[in-house]
Structure formats: C-alpha cells, structure tokens
Image: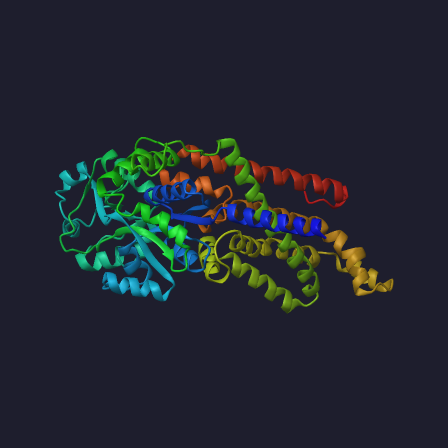
Length: 492
C-alpha cells in the first residue's frame, strides 16, 4: 500500500513538474509588407528568448485578415497602426485615442504597446520626376492628368486611401493596382510616375524617392504598436512591454533599409536589433535552412491539396452519380459549382475567416470548393456521353439501375472522371499558394514573402517546387490511368 502511495505521489509530482516546465505558446503574425515582417520577427524572437513557444503567421493578406484573426483567437499579437485602425478597419476617422481604445475594448482587443514611431502613408515620386514636373506637394498632381499612378491594392480601397485622397485633392488620374514592393522598381524603371509609400520604407533612399508634401493634411497619424486581445496572458503582456518606445522613425527606417536595400535576412536583422537594445544576450538567430524550408512547405502544401481533393472526390462523385438521372438537378449542381469557381480565391479565403478562423481549415474548405467543378463536370459529361444503345441493352437484360451504374456506366465513365480529378488536383496545387495569405503556410509562403521583400530567390523557392509538384501529380495520375483503365478506354 505504501509503495502504491509513493508511486502515485511520484507520478503526480512528475506531471506537475512537466506542466510547469511546458512553454507558454504565442502566435505572432504580420501583414504582407517589410516593416510588419520585421516588427513581428522582433516580437517573436523576444518571446522565444523569454521562454515562449512561438508560432509565426507572417505575410497575412491584409489588415482585416489579421484583425479578424486576432478577434477570433487565432492570433495573439501583430503590429498595427492607429491610422489603419481608425480609417481602414473601424472606419471611424474622427476617433480620439481614448475613443479608439474604447472601440477596441468592445471587440475584446487592446492596443497594448506603443512602439514609439509614426509610419504614415505618403505619395512618392522619383527625384527626376519631381524636378521634371515641378512636383512638391500632392496638390501639384491635379494639374498633370497624364501622370501614371499605381497604388497598392489595399490603398486603393481604404477609407484613408485613394478614393478619399482623390476627392480631397481633386485628382483627375485613374490609378491601377500593384503589389507594394513592386511599385518601387516600377518607379525607378519609369513604368509609372506616382505611388503610395510608407514614410519609414527603406526603399525611399535606395530609389532616391521624394515624398510629396501633404499640403491639405489628408493623412492621419499612424502610430505603431502591438495589438493583442484583452484576455492575453500577463506573462505575454509583460514581455511585449519590453518593446515599448524601443523604436523611432530613424532606427525603423534603418532596419527597413537593411532588409530592402542590403538584402539582409529579417531573422538576423531582428536578432541584431534585440541585442543592440540589450534585450537578448547575443545576436545569433537560428533560421531554418533552405532545404528544410522547402521540405516543410511542400509537405504542408501536399496536406492542404490532398485533403481538399479527397473531400472533393467523396462529395462530388457520389452526388453527381445520384443526380445524373435527374436533368434539372444535374444542371443545377453544375451551375452552383461553376458559380463557386468564379469567386476570387483571396476573397473566398477572407470570407471564410469569420466563420472558421485562420490557418489550414479555411484553405482546405476553399480548395475543396474549387475542386468540385472539374470533378462534377467531367463526371456528368462522361455519363451523358455513354451510348444510349448500351443503356437499352443493359435494361433489356434485366439489370437494375444500380447494376447498370456499377457494371456499365461507371467503367465507361471512369477515364473521364479520373481526368476531372487530375484537373482538380493541378488546380488545387496552384490555388493553394494563396493559402499563405490566411496563415496556412505551404509553398505560397516564400512566394508572398519574396514579393514583399522583392526577393526573386524566395519567389523561386516557392514557385519551382509548386511547378514540380504539379508535374509529379500529372505523372502519377497518368500511371494510375495506365494501371486502372483498359487501354481502349483511356482518354487520349
């Protein structure tokens, strides 16, 4: 009896010790631009240095995606700006700081840590364009309608973006959309004349850009800070407070320059900053190797696409076989799946966030929905193209509808159905690269990061494996077709 008590006490103490030793977890996110990546990586490394187990969801596809992810409890912290909160997210531009805090509190959030700098929107041109056109202020643009304007997609639709800017300044131009990181090289190459910029961007000096004076005081203040939930742990909050006022416009622009201009890795820049500020003992960072990144991203990509494809087959094929004998029902199914295919992938992912949160689940649901059309269409086409005479012969032999389906129709339809599944698989591999915008990872993650940093090697790190994966899937399906389908039935 004593031995049993001692053993039970030992197990209880061991379990208690393991729970105490377990690291607290934190999910750190960023939006898809350089400064947000840097701030998120600094936050993540500081938390890791303080004993946290950190999951990174970097490069989320817009302010609302990150904001909703935080509200849904999928994230713990991400860098945000007061102007973005009031203008683009809450759509209440006249909010004071106290009112902003109250509005966030109603949503269970808090602008917890002031980082110490203002990163406002601005309108940028090259020095050569400014001199040639006599541009000093934004109002000067109204007198030159032939200027080529291109703005980031988010800026084109924000409350503090193009529509209100155009109205305030009476600008006659019609801009196009462009990825923020690609706008600067386009300015430098003369492919456009004007774009939006952030006042702390490192590219401003690299491309010798001039920020036009906001002579009608359009842009609000964008004080940077860390946005968290009200229920975040005291331990997390205590670590985040170490970054309070650790930045100013000068050192933030210098960090951006090191990444954008000098090509330094964000992980090493973040580690060096924390070491310089005395927040960590050394500036070493343990970034994964390129090979391990490619392997991990490929495995995640395969997981997303294979689960979505399996669900698509399990739903689309039985449903189509059931409805194929009912012309109106089959037409309605084809119409609905076709309608789903017209929804832009990023829009569908964003719409799913309030319902299922961030991460892999919305990506799998979106890929599943996109896989339905090729499977449904090919299955219906195969069934409708079966020779009616064969169906009459089968009925004349006394086969039941189920027997006709299993013995006659499915074997004849199998090649076309398999071709539809193959098409769905290849579409899913390409579409899954957008899953990184909602924190699902995969091969889209290096592509998006590469676009943000204008790093072609990172873009290729995701694009080449995705292309090879699509080719491999094509070859696998061809092998399956040769093994399963008789030669005279294969689709040429």
